[in-house]
Image: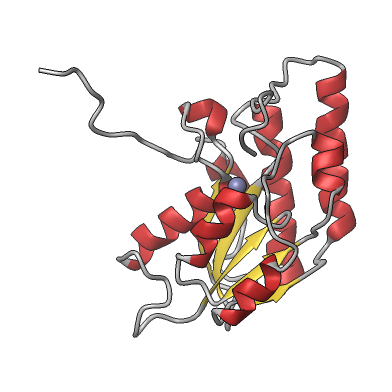
Length: 203
Ligand SMILES: [Zn+2]
């Protein structure tokens, strides 16, 4: 019999509990939701789990936090374990199914600290979210961090809108760049930080 793996596990790191301990279950202010994303992204790379990326799934109307995700590519050894994929998967576990836009559920949004990479573009589009909130877009992420985000079309936001997913841009953009710069500085100092897509694969 061929010896193959039959399961893989993607889980949040234990330190997430510290970050969520004093947080209210509902963050009605969109900026507060993004602030949480930035905090998780910053801690994530410092802890060595993966790149400086985090995401939150929240109920759009209320701001209730449904799930959080961080990039755990390094921690899991799974290249697709980007923050968005982790947050969306955990939100679907929490809400009971593969469609966050299913009947009877409140509308959900995905909050991320930059526009999605080419993988997470699809993952977000098929998740059932009705909103995508990004801190920023543009070449800065790739320039600062050197991560390759893949060949995303210039009309990426229009494609979301065409599928009923509203895109909100530029929420705490400077704060996102500050996290990326701190990360880059540590990489340049070779302080044990791994840029894991040296071949141009993932972020
Ligand atoms: Zn991604």
